Length: 342
Ligand SMILES: NC(=O)c1ccc[n+]([C@@H]2O[C@H](COP(=O)([O-])OP(=O)(O)OC[C@H]3O[C@@H](n4cnc5c(N)ncnc54)[C@H](O)[C@@H]3O)[C@@H](O)[C@H]2O)c1
Ligand SMILES: [Zn+2]
Image 1 (spheres, helix red, strand yellow):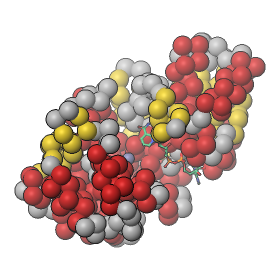
Image 2 (cartoon, protein in one colour; image 1 turned 90 degrees about the vertical axis):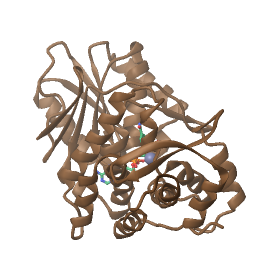
Image 3 (spheres, helix red, strand yellow; image 1 turned 60 degrees about the vertical axis):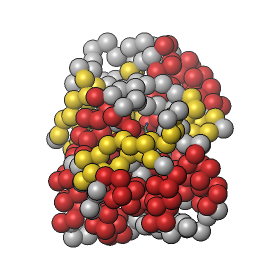
């Protein structure tokens, strides 16, 4: 079992089999309120059994799937449920499932009684390598994650066996963010994907990608400078995601191809062709679907990463070496051309 420490009160456990999320036991805890995604129902039942066998009372609630859970009305009914259960200051909320449920559980735990302990059991690859790391929680309102707070879970539990069995489309979502971690900060992780014949070594991929995010985030918890490199592929990718209505992982893959082309002209990056080949091998798209280019441009312009001095993009000097650079409209056009948008 791999343990990655975030700080004195927060850790990530990566292993095989479902470890009891409550080891070692905390004497003062009387109960756990477990919020599960439908897709992670069986995992959550095992978790509840493990918690109970450790002597702690546990109650399971299966929540709406995907982002439907990240809504004010769902939060309101969950607070009522916690009140019915008498969940107190020393009790724990557990989120079992992908990034949507951990974002939700983290927000609920951060606001219930001004903050109670939260544990995440991340069962999707994207949840494991991205959403459960970094302390962001959130609910959607009109836009994504408009409501939220920063708060680290006391523990994240990741079962590699479960992740290996995920359906292809969920793996692809996670691969996009995992290989991004390699592109921006870990060339060995890029090599690992390159050497893989079929599926890469999940234990290595997850551990390395989590380490990258932990390192970047711990240098910059509240997002100003360096955390921005995690947005590699996201500036243009986000525009495509919204304009084309494709999944986040697919859009980020396309966005990385665009950012790779911008990196070539702005930072002398020489790995664009290799990056593109790696993404294709993972089954990720590398050109944009047909979209309205003006809509994409507008979305990029409205991107929250734009500040007074212009648009700032995460770019690569080399695999593992990312930096944030102000780019011109012409630079963006080069990126768009690389993904077939001219
Ligand atoms: N907090 C952050 O920093 C951060 C970062 C990235 C993404 N996110 C958030 O994460 C969410 C996306 O996460 P996601 O990609 O994990 O999607 P998700 O949480 O919506 O889960 C995707 C699907 O996987 C299913 N699922 C979960 N566990 C499963 C299992 N063991 N077997 C089969 N199916 C299973 C779920 O039921 C769901 O249908 C978004 O809400 C996004 O905003 C947050
Ligand atoms: Zn992302």
